[in-house]
Length: 174
Image 1 (cartoon, helix red, strand yellow):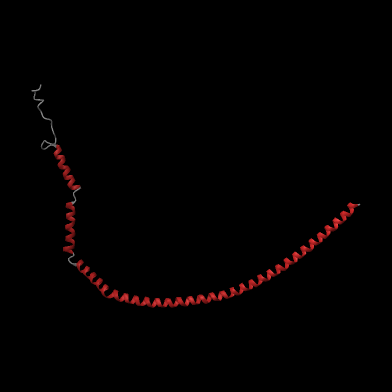
Image 2 (tube, rainbow, N blue to C red):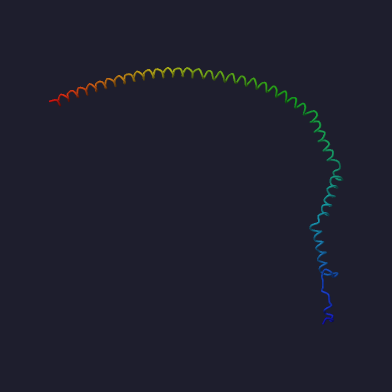
């Protein structure tokens, strides 16, 4: 059997055989890849359209507009901005001086108002102190009167108990 023609047949390999379905599939996959994932042709077309749109159709219109913007900006930086800055500084200095004067006036008015409100407070404080002193003097008088009354009551009780002791001693001695 080793000499039979069946044993000498090579195995069939789809990748090595020309015109096989594997090669066709690989070729189709390459085309699908280039159509779906390779965007270079589309980008190149869009780039050409963009360049054509801006260079041929519009000419130098954008360049003129940009040049006008540049000139306006330069003029504003060179002339308008310094004059505005000077005017602003002058006006701010005047406003600052006015505010300082107004602040001083307000402080002076506030101090006067505080003094006016403090005068009645000082007077009322003095009245309260005088009233308090009167109340304290009267309290001392009442305290002295109560202390005196207490002493008298204590003296009467002492006398009463002394009299009761004497009577008790007389009645016990019988």
